[in-house]
Image (cartoon, rainbow, N blue to C red):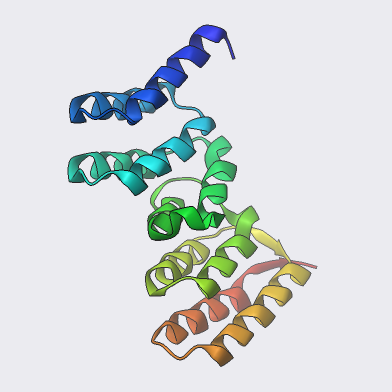
Amino acid sequence: MSDKKNTRLQNIIKDLGASEEKKVLTAIKQLRKHGKPEAIRPIAELLKNTTNETVKSEVISLLYDLKEQNVVEEIISAIEDDYFINEKATLISIFWQSSLDGSEHLSSFIKEAIKGDYLICIEVLTVVENFDATFQETEVEDLKFDIDEAIAQEETEKINLLIGIRKILDELNLEF
């Protein structure tokens, strides 16, 4: 990436942290044109730290409009980071709201469903339901075992979501 483009992205990311709403909203708008995977974490930080509903809604809109598959690793990294515990449901929902394919990260989604709250579990259920891929049989069998264990230990209404995820795992296309 050229230095000029690099500097532009750094300036946009810096503006995400500005105190003036207008500057932040402009930065979000610029990310639509000039965004790169490196911008995902700063965007997640903004989502976590802003109390401004307009900014929050623009960030979510940007995330739901993502089209480039090259951001998937960065989003998964943010989802797996407990620093973003309160943003996890939103970050997971990107995968069914956008056209991004997260199927390579099936086990990450299942782990989040097991350890997460009801809302996270709903989002994982929706994401996994929408996968249109083929999975390794051994990976899916391991995940079924993990889900079965979680179901046996679950005592909240989340149990029904875990059972739903378990049924979806049974219906995935497998590669033998």
